Amino acid sequence: MAYDLKSVKGPRIAGWKLKLVTSLSEKPVSGGAITQRMLADVGVERFRARSASAGTPTAQPLPKVGDTRFGAPEVGDVLRDGLSPRTPEDGYRPLGVQDYANAYRNGETTPVSVAEAILLANDAIEQDDMNLFISQDPEDVMRQAEASAERHRRGEPLGILDGVPVGVKDEVDQSGYGTSVGTRIHGQTKAREDSFSVGRLRSQGALLIGKLNMHELGMGVTGINVHHGTPRNPYNPQHITGGSSSASAAAVGAGLCPLALGADGGGSIRVPASFCGVVGLKPTYGRISEHGAAPLCWSVAHLGPMAFTAADAAIGYAAMAGVDRRDPNTLAQPTVTLAGLEDADCKGLKIGVYDEWFQDADDEVIASCANAIDELVARGAERVPITLYDLDLVRTAHLITIASEMAASQKAVPRGEHHKYGCDTRLLLRVAETLTAVDYINARRHREVLTEQFLDVLQSVDVIATPTTGVTAPVLHADALEAGETNLALVTRIMRFAPAANLTGLPGISVPVGYDQNGLPIGLQFLGRPWDEQRLLGLAHLADSFIARQKPERSYAPTLT
Image (cartoon, rainbow, N blue to C red):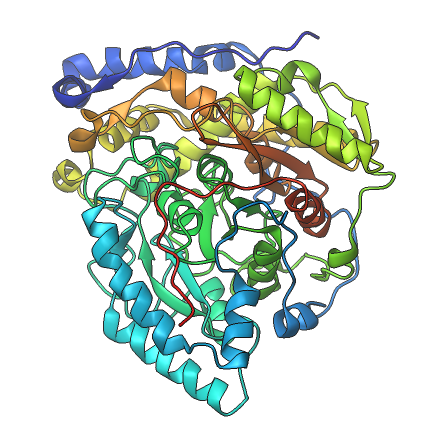
């Protein structure tokens, strides 16, 4: 079977035109024609014409495969001692987790001084119109910093993260903050307790610096937000960050914090990580608890770390991964381990590449990703040709799944309140509502077969490599800032390689591997076997050693004084 991933056609609509189309989509007479046209543009008619393959839908996309060792995480040494980053001496690297920990240990600075510097940086962030935060409580930040400073004075830090600035995407509950998920509708009441992931970070002493901006409801990969301002790409503020974990990527890329919590239902960690030049890990489905995360797309949703280096991403992963009795999907996971990560190499590693898929991207993206794989091959890896079928079915099955679940998640919002969503979100919700129960069930049935295909391929190779995105960060158009935009052709180009990991539940990581001629970052994606995050982080850690990073145009890194 030939490579079948289709290019989606459709006009870009923004400004007053988007407002008009959105209004018409919500009217009884015109709405049906608009929504059916958009469904046809994204391939739903082709999907409906194809009978579903055999398969029984389940809530857990992955079978119980892989390592069967169960027990407490084996990451205590990492959370106590940290990991040293591997970056070329001639490359750029802002302050990392180890830098903060060493500075506190050596008395060069204190968490209080760092907190004050971060709060002061907000003036520059606002002046530059970077729109990184949805909410920040300076008093809360300082209380955390003072408590951390006291622990360091006593010589009793909670771990390597104690006093280290960490940002939280505003899709996840943090005590004392509302969870807006990028809207004007949600988050009016402050969370009374942390989500599991935020609680784990707090238990390690992380300095939680505020709730970071995101694409509204996570229903897009551009990061455009008409309510809270659109985050800007630190490498060029005239370009998008990607989404939906937009400001999580931008804050890390700009050096404001070495680590942030992101969420990924269809590339929402990996896409902005690629566009903003950082490492983004989407773990295996069920590896990090979703308790306390907004239930937007429960069967494809993942939480994960975003960091400037693989070492810091590994620390964030170690802090958050593990069993949580409040999330049944986490109960079947094997032991979390990062043993030997600092000594990781790629001798004998088999990297699977489906050439037709790999090359379905812009030339500069392909070249940088291919060069990085060549470097890994020179260090002992083997590049293995593979073939994957029905990639267009992967795309449409994921689209139907995530869109149906997101539409269902917003059913509690009264129709009279829908005007408070941005026009792009209103339009996408209206389209999603026209999908049927049969569409959703058939997508889930296809999902079982498609997942088995990826698992079969991963028996012959250790990882599958693709570019993270088909393009580098596109220009942020001024007419999108007020009402948003819809651009199906561009969105599917951005998402060319992302949905497979969400549909199958397999772990995926985006690794910075270069820059285009305009200095915009390029990411390489690795998909791994279930529960094999350690291998993905090891590959990223190795890539860090030979990819010289560039300083972004906008930098807000605190100074250690």
